Amino acid sequence: MNRRLVCLKAGEVGWLEVPRRSPAEGEVLVRPTYGVEKHGTMAAFVKGYGNARGRWDSEARIHRQGGMLWSYPVPLGNMQFGETETGERVAWFGPFESSSVVKESSLRQLGTVEWIDAAMLDPGTFALGALRDGNARIGDSVAIFGLGAIGLAAVQLAHAAGASQIFALDPIESRRRIAEKYGAVTIDPTTDDAGLTIREATGMRGVDVVIEYSGAWRAFQASFRAVAYGGTIVCGAFPPPFPAGLDLGGEAHMNRPRVIFSRACSDPNPDHPRWDEQRIIESVWGLISSGSLKGDGIIDAPIPFEDLPEVYPQIAEHPESHLKLSVRYPL
Image 1 (cartoon, rainbow, N blue to C red):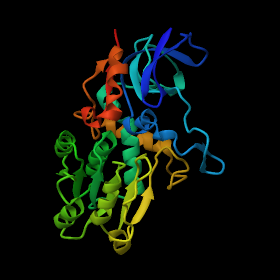
Image 2 (cartoon, rainbow, N blue to C red; image 1 turned 30 degrees about the horizontal axis):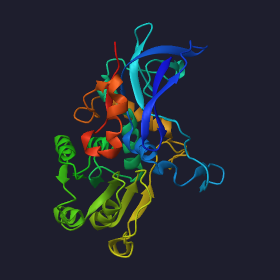
Image 3 (cartoon, rainbow, N blue to C red; image 1 turned 180 degrees about the horizontal axis):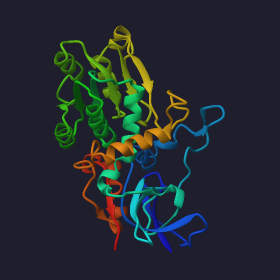
């Protein structure tokens, strides 16, 4: 049997035993060596709010009450890295499991790219999508709220895009230190008036683009104070419903920002037909390959595969304990 990590129901993480199988035509047996998780999305299902809105009706493009967006058990895990039987180093999207059979067309050859940098492909895809949706251009000032893997990828990509000033905000000090390493000016939103601090640092103009990946309503509120008149706020997180308290009649009303919701994997892309999800992914892979997007400091030190059921719940219960969880598979 093959062990796969799943969320059995809201709040419960454990192993699911699934039958081992041989590769069919067009499939490859791969031996996993490392793997990483996608925290924000998967925490929504571990915590339980991911299904609270009901199932997604793709034809009507609304949530329907009474159904589920994803049915339990939900497989956990995002990108995996390993070797084929012929010794090729590859990456693929899939759950944490002791062995994997993958479509050959879904494998990405790593070449000389280290797995820790390749693990930035998924967060980098959403970061690049958000920066493009916000039309961040050379010389623009950018503020990034929420320094998970996507936010820290956005810091690096904003630098690569030629941003003149990059502000990075997160209540977790260790994440701010990583953002500083990648060239950002950091702000603790729990002790500073983030919006006012950013306005003062930009001659009271405010930033041209805000990238909001914290999913916190207070950060969304602060972004209205931080953004320049007519600037753009890009919302990319997958948060639960906001509580009462969001004020759209203050700075939001006076500064008239554009508010854009970003999701790089939703096609058609705003720049269709020139851009789509696949072009974003390949562009990010090029940035990783060239060294412009790195996982150093962002990807956690790997934990043993066997420890996953015990450690995994911490990413939902104690987000400060992990930035991007990584796993080392047994040899």
